[in-house]
Amino acid sequence: MSDQYKKLAAERAADDVTSGMRLGIGTGSTAEFFVHALARRVQDGLDVIGVPTSERTRELASSLGIRLTTLDELPELDLTVDGADELDPHLSLIKGGGGALLREKIVASASANMIVIADGSKEVATLGRFPLPIEVVPFGLEATRRAILKVFGDLGLPLNMALRGGSAQPFVTDGGHFILDAQLESIPEVQTLGDRLVAIPGVVEHGLFIELATKAYVAGTDGVKTVLPI
Ligand SMILES: O=C(CO)[C@H](O)[C@H](O)COP(=O)(O)O
View 1 (cartoon, rainbow, N blue to C red):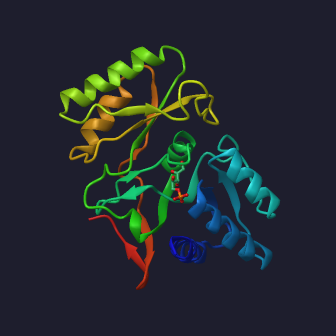
View 2 (view 1 turned 180 degrees about the horizontal axis):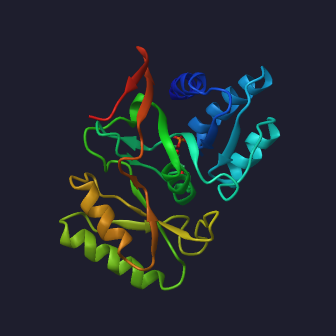
């Protein structure tokens, strides 16, 4: 069922794309529905150029005939369309469930607008039910892990974090980093937590996307609703 809603939201976002746009293209199952919808429009003559947020998205978009480039070639984008693991009424997001949060955040930050596409299960009043992905460099992993837990302790958050993939075979991001997933239950102060995390030297980025999304299409039994940040 949720796949059907992901597809609906993705197709609505594809309708917003106009010829000449420079697009950031997200990662994940919802973003893949967007890539397919965009490819259909490209086959019908839509002229766009895209910057993918992962190798996975690059392969799919390229195989479907979408013209692609890099952010170095095209450092300013008109619109990024991407999924999310959670969105709150401010359109603050948790992203990174698919492991692409660093490139996703760089691409979204280079875009004038960001549309989030999601099924209704991703909407929450307060972020934190979904484990927060934190991308870290492999060097000094244990020291970085302790520094992150210290931040959680200072902010009264649960000390509950796991290395994605496990220590025997950690998941490695497109950038060659590891991901720690923190089960925080509820994050009342997203900005404070984000600021404290990026101040840790071994942290590359975290999955809190704050003031990046400009609109969301959220699909459910009543169809697709447009959500603007409050
Ligand atoms: O942030 C992401 C990948 O890093 C995805 O957008 C997020 O995990 C949502 O994925 P899906 O659309 O498969 O539910």
